[in-house]
Amino acid sequence: DTAVSQTPKYLVTQMGNDKSIKCEQNLGHDTMYWYKQDSKKFLKIMFSYNNKELIINETVPNRFSPKSPDKAHLNLHINSLELGDSAVYFCASSPRFRGRTGELFFGEGSRLTVL
Amino acid sequence: EDQVTQSPEALRLQEGESSSLNCSYTVSGLRGLFWYRQDPGKGPEFLFTLYSAGEEKEKERLKATLTKKESFLHITAPKPEDSATYLCAVQGIYAGGTSYGKLTFGQGTILTVHP
Image (cartoon, rainbow over all chains, first blue to last red):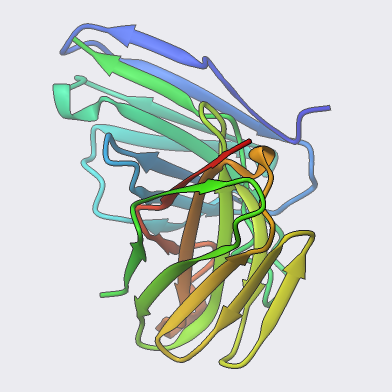
C-alpha cells in the first residue's frame, strides 16, 4: 500500500501548455506539501496545506495553483508552462503533532520536462 | 534566511570503511534538524530528527549528532545498500507558527559504497 502516491510519474510537454499533477496520501495526515527539486537536486518548498487550508505559499509564480479538495488530496495545476519549470515535483505529507511536522513522507515524484 | 550546506558533495567508500557526512546550518531558531535518504528516482525517506545540541540518534549503521552549527551523519562499516544521497534539512521557528513542514534542504551528499 503506497503511503503517498502521485500521478503521473513523467510528463513531457511543450512550452505554453497546461498540466496537472495529482497526489493522494493514506496516512491520515492533516498537512500536505508540494516541493520542487531542481537539476542541482535542491529541494524547495512551494506550498503547504493544513486540513485543506493553504498555510505556506513560497513566492511561487501564480501560474502554479494548488488545490486541496480534502485533507487526503493535494493537486498541482501549472498554466503556461515555461522551460524553467522542468524539474521533479514531490508531494509530501506530515503529522501535525508538535515536533513531528518536519517528518515528511514523500511520494516518488513527478518528473516534468518542458520542451 | 535559513541555509544548509552539506559536504562533501560526493563520497566513495569501500565496504566496511567508516566515515562521516557534514551538514552546516544557519537558522534564526531551530525547531529541528532532519536527515533524509534519497535513492535514485525515489522520494526522500525520513531517517532522523535532532532537536537540540548534544543530541544523538542511531539507526543500524547510521548515527546522527548535532551541535549548534552543524550535524554529522556517521556511517559505521557501510554496506553497498547504504549507497544513496543523504539530505540534511532544518526547520526554523517562525512567528505565527507557520513552520509546518517548511524545511530548508542542503544539496545532499551522494554516497557510493563499493563491495
